[in-house]
View: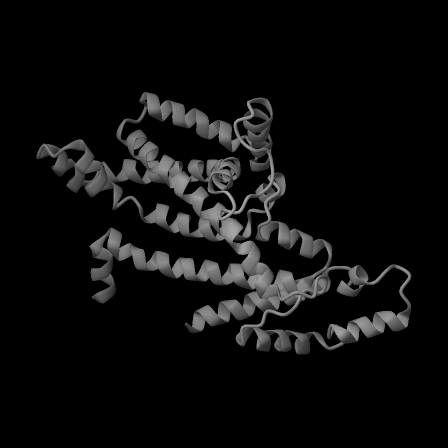
Length: 309
């Protein structure tokens, strides 16, 4: 717990210092270019920007500890309510992308490791190479052009809430989810394939083969669980990264998520919003890493024995 709090403290201090180094001030984005010095001074006093940096930091942290993330300089709205409005879009996008990536990469990685050099292995290697050479924003534009513009199978841009139209809601999620999942499929498949190939050469797996156990049982029960440590670790990191890093995809597909909110806040120097998003992303990372650590004993009971010994 002490390490958790220390990391959050260091992250928030770093954000405050980095934002202070950015040229300009939030007041420059709020007031017109011909604002008088008196108006600038009044605006700085109104938003507390005339106070020393350390005083502003502890004032903001005091509000955070009470559940108050502050108010946007631009809109005057509560930052917490703004994030709560935008978060479901980014969370749904990130988790669906992770689920799709795992659903594709686990069977492909397992079978490619079991049959190296086979048809699936060669096809997946080609697709991986092609995907690595294609940036996410290029892939997103290509998907929009092919499936939305040329074929007319899916909506082009925009967002439809689930409560308004569930079918339209998921139709608009298909392309952005595939765009995000494509890069993660490459990462997951390569990691799992490498670990599986090493595990399949271990004595207990060779012994299971010698006893004539079914292939599916050897792969899933004896090999996959032991080979999933790296996959689980990387998946946790990817979830945290996707939640705070879906900026390009949200911009391409005009999705009202947290990524576009952060870009808008940076451009308008709405530092309160940026600070809140960085803090939220740091908390998500730390919580996911803690959950990942708890899953290790479930994958391999030997981890539990080592920890208790």
